[in-house]
Length: 407
Ligand SMILES: C[S@@+](CC[C@H](N)C(=O)[O-])C[C@H]1O[C@@H](n2cnc3c(N)ncnc32)[C@H](O)[C@@H]1O
Image 1 (cartoon, rainbow, N blue to C red):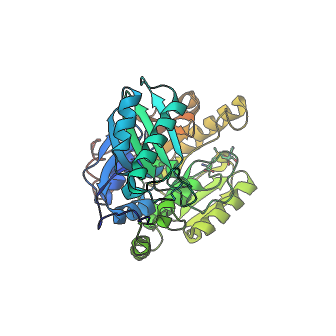
Image 2: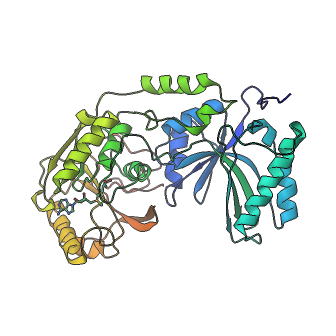
Image 3: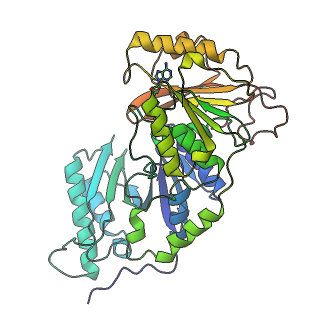
């Protein structure tokens, strides 16, 4: 008779939170804030360890990570023999039930095993051989639940993972329709966390589009777990105790705070974008925290002080044409100039942004919005007079100017 996979009580998994290039340290800080101190950061991923409970908590709470994987094994694989033999010895029987669907995807970077289809086929065969040890049979039907496996070869080191997330973590569930050039939710959460904004300070996005930056800031400011509105692939797995996610959701709901002290302000010259932001904010349950209205960038003024502007203005490749974009950036320079106490953060793929804006950024960070290489231009303003010192890793800057250091 077939046995169910035998996961002993709360095993400790090696877990990988994947992240887009440039946001790895933001994800590591999120993990540290969640209580996971032993993280190892490398390109595109943060490694840590945890139980089923931790998988549930991190799925719900990680804001900037793309997905959460279980690392089943990692070993040198310079040839097919090494890849096959070592893959076959990994504990697949503990993870995959007899009817598991386990598609294998792969990639190979700077490795001797270059043929991804052959690498995938070798891994699939090795896993089948492993499963046959417990379930002797000719073939596996693969008619059950989904366990997506990835083989990643980097410099001849193989990493084998199972995806616990399903649709990427950016799919929060609140954005059914996006604007013309939307920002990923995970990226928007990263931009906010790379800034000095906190729930005590004004926040403005003068090019709000579908409202992603404002909504992610509201979720952060109200301590709402970004994954509360969706489900995750592993919830359905045979060995995942149903109580684990239920309890994690209950705990997350109990953490929610009332709205931020300052409303989050969004503007866009397109009335459809204004409506979209309102609809998305309502879906996300943060409509009361966000004020949005139609406004041209040239009309921007405010009496508020010590706020943060975090924005993703139009750029040539995706919206409008260059002359128009240049005019928009010049307007940004003009209308932001009087806001001497504000900190300004601009994500754009446009390489000549600073020239048109009229100021060199104190700091820049290369980030990818999808495949598009962007720069995050940072213009930190003075710290609010009555504020507590910034978090230690952020306080690396000077005393009178918030330098976004550390990450
Ligand atoms: C790159 S999109 C912003 C996307 C947004 N971050 C999101 O996640 O959906 C730029 C936005 O700027 C708006 N926009 C372009 N020119 C503008 C102007 N002169 N004044 C105000 N808004 C403008 C566009 O309507 C568009 O929604």
